[in-house]
Length: 290
Image (cartoon, rainbow, N blue to C red):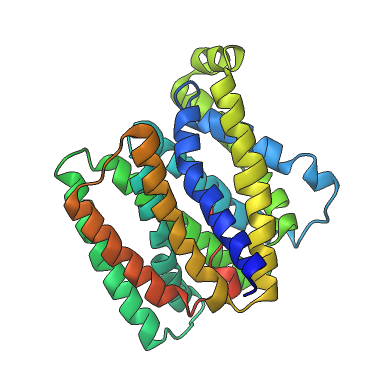
């Protein structure tokens, strides 16, 4: 990769790493599923009026249900339940390992020895992180975050099965799947009164957080990342995703005073090593970061 494009890849990783702290800040005033609905309304419109539908509705709905609605609803709920933002940025990268396994089962893809080793190492690291986190905090938010990673992986495999380019069109059109279900779930879980109060009392923190997730994390991040994947081999681009949890953990440390324990750090390093081993062999559409 050229120095300019390497710098762009680092910038995307920086944007995505900061995204977790930004989301967490916005959730202080808005219920998580309502906040999610706000984000994806703005991701979808007006882009769906400007870019063509990337494929059949059936494929768009399935990909949007898992890659967008499933992944982000679980992530937002996990953060609202108390999942540390920095740790969430790490655990979410388990999607790489899940993608390898699910692609082997659903698509009959033969995993390479390198991928099998990477999945094994990454799983050990994830278990260590889970054990370390469980020793100091409730484990439910962690399990919900793992569920978000699993949903993301299923979306990756669905996109691969559909052979649909994971570009701006897919980002915009799959975003249409999110707002109405997220709003309906928020009304059911939080109640109309809380939803109404949150909308009426929407503060600048939530507005700025939403703007960041829409403009930088969703639109800028996807456009640049997919452009790099179109230009270079996946093995040259995908390793930059390993910077996301590093930035996420450092941002949470500086902004929220969130300090990981020694055991969490050790498990995270093992997990990222596994992700690195597995991901360098993943094809382009198998990794589409948040």
